[in-house]
Image 1 (tube, one colour):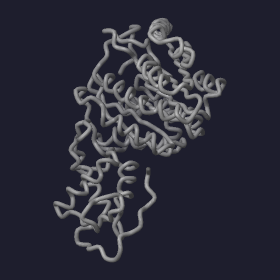
Image 2 (tube, helix red, strand yellow):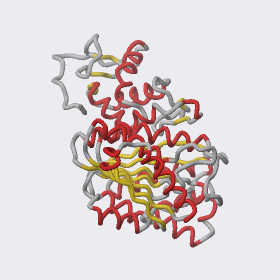
Image 3 (cartoon, rainbow, N blue to C red):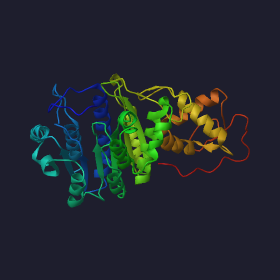
Image 4 (cartoon, rainbow, N blue to C red):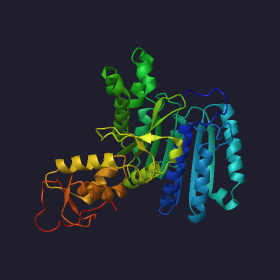
Length: 375
């Protein structure tokens, strides 16, 4: 979206979807970390005013409410660092966060600290995190910018040094495809965001593939920065422009919980998804029990390409790391593939130990030992 001119603005459907995703993920993230660590930190680089035109809460207020609930069950500590450039929005944000704190008990407010700073988010946010000792502790950083290449690669790289850090970045490819080819200054912005010039090959891509090319380049950017796993979430803004939320983590459990949150987004927001590994690029409704036809196609191809078949445990991990689907959806997909005679299995009952083979293969010998699983 374009940078708003007013302190507050109407909340559009794609923002509602982002907030739904954020709420669900933080509701899983906070209890897990607070059960294992004494303190965790949440940070935003583009916090906004904390409220929308019709009174809907912004992401800082949503996060605060989630954390307050988590602290009731886990008496540890949480910190919030919020950066906003516009002084009018900072004033409103302070007011909204004060109201959020008034709704909580003294017990929660003593354990949940809120720090709001006015100014450019970089390098100030990183300096804040470093000075507070948050780097190296569990940390979630939301960088929900207004769509330009605003997030420098150097920041992602510094954050990724720390194993317990996760990021969620908003990336809008249209800015670079529209302006950067003929404007050197915008190309330099792209180079800063991607940490190199490889992304500039987008100018040679067919028009239908430019956005997906930049999306994959940006996910690779997060990998190079040091985030082992990435996941992208595709949506349209209020002007019909495609944007991506790109999640980066070093923790496979974090990836699993983000997928759970993704599939739990309210389908009334009208957000859809496409698995990049699906050759048919079928659009998927974001619902908890979606059509798994693309997953079945992907799993069948993966099994056929294997030399001696794959266990369900291996297919679950492949699904977690390489597709948009959840490991919990694998067993049902394998059963349907077997019913269609698209794969064979070495056991009648499909479990994590089951060996899945191409349809022409027939299992011989004893059932293989159980593989090391994700859980």
